[in-house]
Image: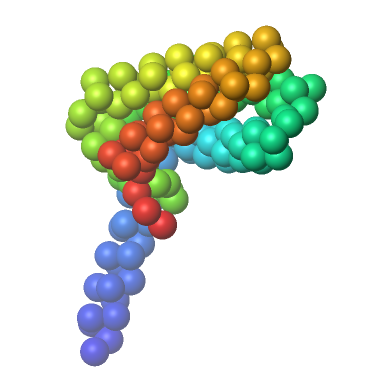
Length: 153
């Protein structure tokens, strides 16, 4: 019995050291940055959605939120370096398919950036109807990517 415990501890130790090796500081920073950005995007999107649901959105509140979403969306492509998926050993919802079908992922990121810019433009122009349409487009773009490239918890 002692022998199997030793083997188990050795295996766990090897896996832990591999995970630590795989998760370089650059990878760790990229994962943390993308998770923080997506959390901020989600919060801002929810706030915009809540404003739209109110019937008369406060555009002074919405404008900086939409601007932040657009700015964060533009930075996201750099937060997915190779090695920052599940193989990093760190907690991430990024599926390996991101790197296996990177062309499709990059296209969806571009769609998100375009949709976020449209949201920002509608908010900056004070156009509530345009904002609602842009919100719907952006939400659909996010969902498309999540359905394909984001793991469930």
